[in-house]
Amino acid sequence: MSAQAERKTENLPQWKKEEVDELAQIIDEYESVGVVGIAGIPSKQLQDMRRDLYGTAVLRVSRNTLQTRALEDAGLGDLVEHIEGQVGIVGTNENPFSLYKELEASKTPAPINEGEVAPNDIVIPEGDTGVDPGPFVGELQSVGANARIEDGSIQVMEDSTVLEAGGTVSADLTNVLNELGIEPKEVGLDLRAVIADGVLFSPEDLDIDVDAYRSDVSTAAARARNLSLNASFPTATTAPTLIAKATGEAKSLGLQAAIEDEALMPDLVSKADAQLRALASQIDDEEALPDDLQDVAAAAPAAAEDEDEDESTDDQTEDEAETEDADADTDDDDEDDGDGAAGLGEMFG
Image (cartoon, rainbow, N blue to C red; front, side, top):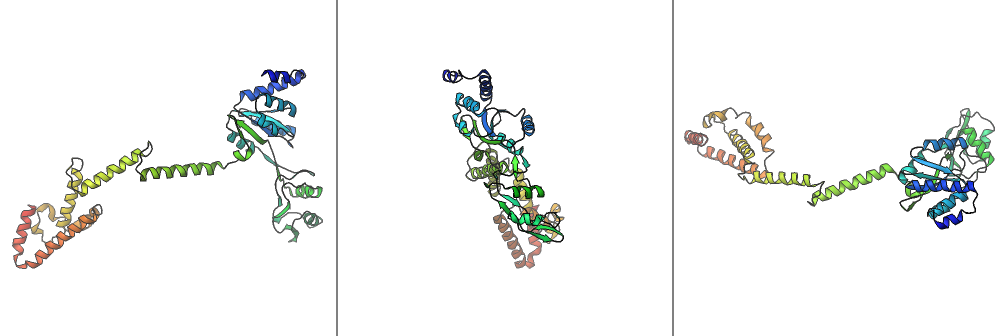
């Protein structure tokens, strides 16, 4: 504690000094320190909430003047303006977003009393109230609900906003809400502000949709990866994909250009064999073919189609042109069929 802080506590009673010291210890021990509102929380429920926070955060409730002194002594004056009404100091080593989410999840619905300020719009929903016909329909109408008797019970004909946020709850409205079992407010620790690593966070800063935020980050990462791939910009993430893509393109180019590379020879041989069989399948005269190609004449066309799917359009055009030339030569030389067959036999033999 600084000399100035010591002077401020010189005239405090001993119990107040001890209380300030305990608050200061919480502020010093935890990475994140905040102020929470506890108004309207019954004592037993507050104790349950404090117990539920055990292991995650610690809550200390004290007089506002003592909390203010402890925060000022610790240099956390930005939190002092939130010391108003029934509040407490909370300390945690969790990040502020996790703290806010946990506090919000711990809130429970509760009835609202006469004279309280509505924290949000109070709406009586459309539907059957389950109340038998009687004076209650008039009470509903008096608070602004569109209600009437139908089918032997009191019906609310449409969602009816009976009090806007910030309005004061009347006795009549309290009775109607209690009769319908409507609990329009939430009871829980209300985080007003928190400081972590010297940064002040308000509830608005901490109220984020985690799933939507995670989805946005995933989308951004995917788009960045696609941009890197399309721009051929190597990173630790995209380098393997870029190398695989380049390898595939280089192999495709080598096959199209018939480059006699050791790594390409098996594919080139398979390609040449497929083209040879496709050509052989177009020849009707089995005597013109060597023995190992005679049995593929009938089945080869289907096989050739499957293998030709992997060939380029240029290769297909060249094969068809060669086939058409061969057919044309056969038609022109009907009288020399024997010599043509012998020539093809020598070609494949």
